[in-house]
Structures are given as C-alpha cells and as structure tokens.
Length: 114
Image (cartoon, rainbow, N blue to C red; front, side, top):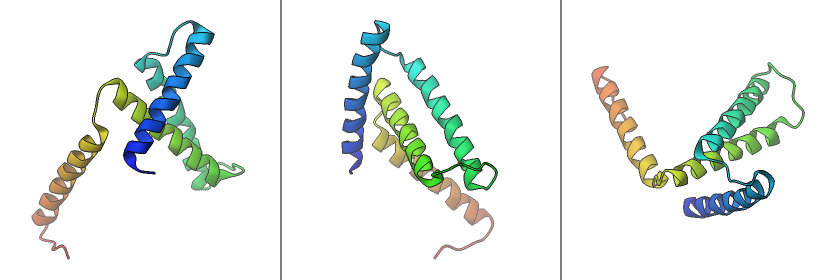
C-alpha cells in the first residue's frame, strides 16, 4: 500500500469512528482524545516490546506487535490530518535534517562513509 493510500484509508476509518462516536456519545472525539488513545496504544506497544525482549510472556506476540504498530500509525496519520500536516513532506524533511546531523557527527569524528 502506498503512503497516500494509507492516509486515505486512515481518513475513511476515522470518518466511520466519528459516526460511531456521534451515535454513542452524541459527539466525535477531539484531537486531544485521539491523542489519548494513541498514548494508550503506545503503552500497549511498550508491553509487547517487553515481550519481544523476553520480559513478558505473551501469546501470538508477533501479530500483536504488528497490530499495535499499525494502530499507532493510524493515530499518527489521523493526528496529522487533524492539524493539516503534510506528513510525507514532513517525514522527508525530518529525515534530511537527521541525515545532515549524522553527516556532521561523522565528519567530526573523522569517519568516512562508503
């Protein structure tokens, strides 16, 4: 699935959740509430990462890690939409910045890159 397809899929699921929330709570979740859900997903993911490190026994660990990572990605895509962030552009420029910083670090220690 291409990035733009993931964004559109996340939008569609968010729209369906908004309908569900309106039916159940008479309003849709705010971006702050979506963020709280994201924090909960990150907490769930952290426990599964402990399982991958051998600290927590968890059945079906690999599929649960994949699920929580996908949940977290959905939240990030949804929050980006909430705040009109072009996530593809932001990701590209952030990776450029990080690579620039790492290049400076490598140059400062005299290493060469192949």
